[in-house]
Image (cartoon, rainbow, N blue to C red; front, side, top):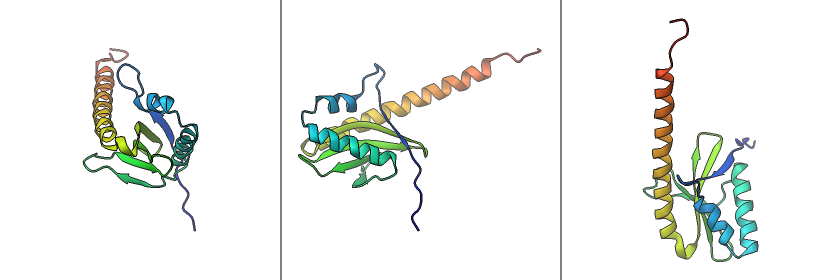
Amino acid sequence: MVKPTTPRKANEYEDSDGRSPFGEWLTALKDVRGKVKITKAITQMEGGNFGDHKAITGGSGLYERRIDFGPGYRIYYIIEGDKLIIIFAGSEKKDQQQAIDNAKDYYADYKKRKKEESDSAAKGKQSKPKKGK
């Protein structure tokens, strides 16, 4: 019996300036068929099919989705909870190491800003005056 998969939503990581490194890379890509393959891979990932992927060594939860087409495209992402995929970067095989290093930096920034937002929200809840007092 086939196990049902949890549908997920793929979001692009944005830095503190609202810039999406993955989106910029994909937009600049001139290979139209490659763009279609990459977009299809993301759709498959949202449906639970992660295809040819592996954990990045020292990436603390960072994964690489390999797309066997053209120059060998790569997508670097994390799975957050059971509903979300955060896409950090994309590359061709020849730029793989630089893209992995960048994705690790983006992931570190993402975690830092998420913690700051969480801490700020928790602090905001503590400082609210209680009604009736």
